[in-house]
Amino acid sequence: MTYTFDFSFLAEYWPQLLKGLVQTAQLSLLSIIFGFLLGTLLAIGRTAQSKLLRRICAIYVEAIRNTPLLVQMFMIYFGLASVGFKLSAEFCAVLAIVINVSSYTCEIMRAGIESVRKGQREASDCLGLTWLQSLFLVVLPPATERVYPALVSQFILIMLATSLVSQISAEELTSTAARIDSMTFRSFEIYTVVALIYIGLAFVFRLGFWALSRLVFPRLRRLGTPL
Amino acid sequence: MLTTFQMQALLTAAVWTAGLSLIAFVLGGAVGLLIAVMRVSANRVLRGIAFTYIQIVQGTPLLVMMMLAFFGLSILGFDLTPFAAASFAMVIYSSAYFGEIWRGGILAVPKTQWEAAECLALHPVQRFWLVIIPQGLRISTPPTVGFMVQIVKNTSLASVIGVAELTYTSKLINNSTFQPFIIFSVVAVLYFCMCYPLAWWSRKLEDKLNVAHR
Image (cartoon, rainbow over all chains, first blue to last red; front, side, top):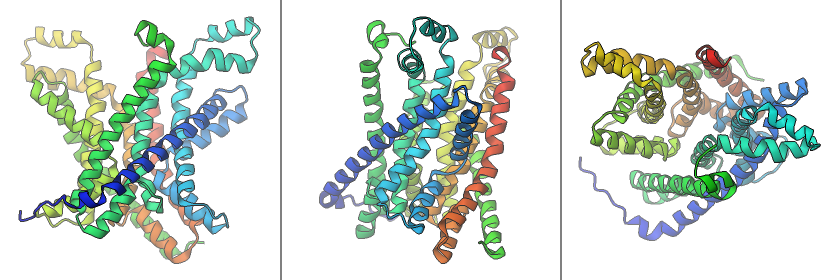
């Protein structure tokens, strides 16, 4: 092996990498928040009384979960542009990831909702809570708490999947790496650095979600035991 | 609409996608089994190595791994085709996930099985390979099949280093025909036809194993 590793380009390009990192974090958080909201809505639809609604949500979930995110992204970015919607690459990226993550979140949240005992629902009915109140006050909080670890894993995977948006020319960490690569030709070095940054970011995200769980689920805070 | 030639190109590309998935599954499974065994071994160093490996691989996007495999291996002096580099990345990627899935399965085998095997005077190696591993793998069959869906979908990332699989070919055709909705819909349907049976099978297996809660 006669290759000499050269990381000196970092001195010049680190501000760009930092910017890419911030963009990746923003993109991930935005997708996670909206994906969670849409996914929870879908999960409510998937456990609804109406058979039609359940069927529609199921078809959506199966269609999204069995096709690659990259193809979905191409379809939204190139497809919408071809029928006249001029949307920015960043918007299409968030849209595609939100659609993708919502279908996974839906399945996870559905498991959570189904794990809440029927008696809880009946009790809230007896207390005269409306359907919406019983859903948001009685069913969703413990449901979310139970599936929280699975949700976090999925969100970390989505954070890693944001690297795909470089393929539709949206700006983030991987596309920044590709640009630096094309200027310095230090492919291996730059992608090693970027891989390390992603590992660090995944760690930070895990830590953040752990802190969030302490904040949002009082039972966990008070007793220190999961549900 | 698509011409016969374009349809043929897509079907050929689908075979490459299937081939890449198969390599990732078979070789990744072999390495993954090793990782899973290391992960539950009594030796602290082996456990640490497997844990670090899994953390690194699961913390890196597959796209970046593809790039690293493609550029990195050529630096090391291997003159690899994009397909070989993509296979390498896929094997690394899937082995980490398989390792973690199977570790869960192995740990789920009741402790009494270990003790019973010990009472039968089986050698530790026999105990592990003849008693624990078969049961552990059986428990983790549904998530394994479920992960195969992920593998098939993630082969689409091989397009970025120039492997002529389904996504790459669809991009090529789109570049010449400019009918993104049609072409990507067809490709999505092709992926769906490969993934849905696996997802369905995984669900069936889960139902079958979950007799107690049915």
